[in-house]
Image 1: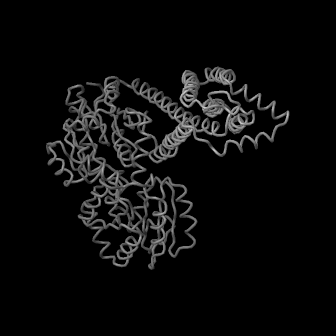
Image 2: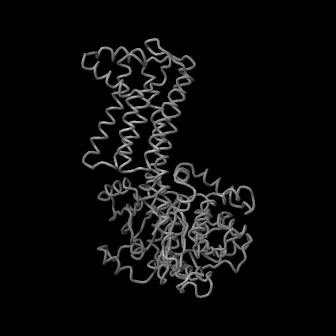
Image 3: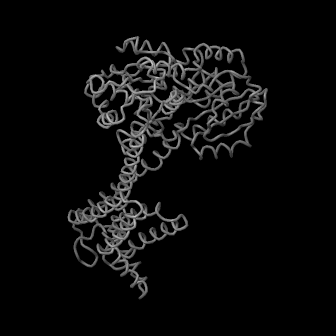
Length: 612
């Protein structure tokens, strides 16, 4: 059954692998271009003569033979032979990769020769076309890719050896070009910079092609499922984690039906593309962490776009063609969107009468934004009457909106005694307990997260801290190292699956104001101190929650210190916030939301055994 990737893992991989590859390719290409322009304009580099003279002093007969062997290996004949041998091996174990490897390898000499002709630099021996070093470029670009594609196909015990051989080959290839006197050091540096940019882009495209093949296999498997089953497709994304959590919870509710098959897809990854998903994830995380003003501008600039405006139509068109083919081949009985982009695409298709599949959209924040307002959607599930009224003001008919609450796991509830829960987890039953959540993706910068940790752990009042670091292993280690030196006891967690238990035993939570996380806290009747909201949607969440009286906001570590100290030393204020959370908390929202969504089906279809 196709499913969304684990929310924390997928986000972490997207940020630290694919996106960093793209950034590395951009920086390497910038260096390559800068060197090429400087060389073309006749710039001289001080490093070139000393590097040539230094390497010249190493000459021995053995090194001469080694350098000449590397010269042959790095030639077009040598590289071509390695590509042919590797392709023959891959044809046995991974045939779809072979055409890509061949096309990639043929592209490298085109880039090399094109650059040589543009720059036209003389070599140290007076021959033409010295920049960049073609051998060095090919060694890093082609040998690097061959290493990458071979690694998964060989036994684990030999993988480290392959990497070591590949790295040594790339390094010695560059040195040998200076040693033989056929290139300047800057020619070699240019070869490394250009080869690295080419390699990083090549690996990114290779990953994208592999992801596309995997998506096709998943779709083929699901297309061959039971034709009589009730089919529900859930479209989400992994930005931030909340959309994914809602998708998971609703899928669990739907699977309770007999004969129901649920398919979950990351819409951006599956229907728009891996590279686009990687780039936008990187930009989202980067802007939230390092340039929040940029995300605020984007959020506000798109907050009131009419649904029929050119920009909104462009956004709605992303992935629409693949989605159309998917609907035609899979024929789901119902589609549920927990992210705005697929909702917009489906709305376009329904308004154009290109599909009649019932569509529901779940709004995952306590705010109204134009990206969620799509007139072709049949049903909107929203968090509150406040959001419902906002949607009506934007033109959505009231009968299409249900304020059931954001669907959350039914285990988030206020049932149970906090003292008993603390005893069961080996905590002090009588100490006020403060839960600190930085989020699965840790959108808080680590220094700020540790400052919140310190001011809470050193409160001049007896408390105990539950500090959840999400997927940030560096933060977890840093927090764990600080634990013995602080005044109050701290229990440090990484990524946890039983957040509902941590909320159930806590008296107060310090957290970012994500729509899903705060809905879980309200259901658990847990007062909130909200910190570092993401500009835009989370700032609006703050306004809503503080207006209700269930939360206070603290912008700095010093304000967090004051707010938490005030609440734990005035239990009556904490109790008023708990009462406010009780009034608006919506435990059981998932079951109510799922029931409203299933009501879109023709009468009896949810329990029938045959397709209409």
